[in-house]
Image (cartoon, rainbow, N blue to C red; front, side, top):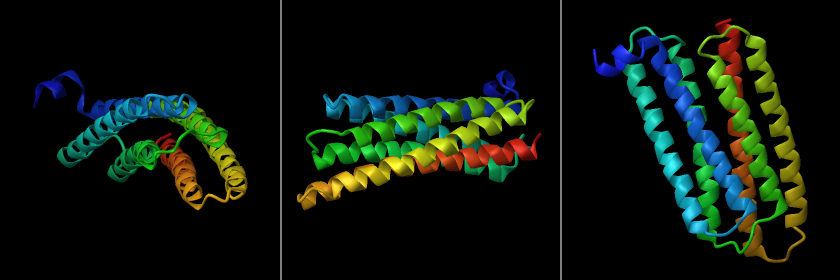
Length: 209
């Protein structure tokens, strides 16, 4: 048994890793809000998001390694795998949005991007709190309430995307339309991925309460 296993009980390792991963996702959400809200020093801000995505990948890999090495887990192995994958997906789409903004060379952001980024941020803050609660599920209803809020925020993101399309297709610049449509959709998909995490957490709360 390694030193880490002496320090952190084996059944607590997964919860600690999930909390670390959720914290990285929250940091990335703040970075994407900062990028779209203050579209300056773009390359540096994108690099910060890429670094966080790499950090998230490392934690996700550690979760899978731990899963392969642990015979008895505090959650069902499929639940662990789904939660790790879903959290990592949010990071992937945040990074994907940022890198597209940089490589597409868009001259400025707009209110739709800002609104979508802030909905991602609000969603992952809710998810981080719910992730902390699965360590000891004393009140599954509290987890469910967080998940319901994430679902509500995802519905709002759908509305924002619809409005963004309405404004987008008023333009006659086909290249700009393609670039902005892709960015809008990556931001909205990130909110879909937040909802995926919420669904996994809700299932965990129900199964283990």
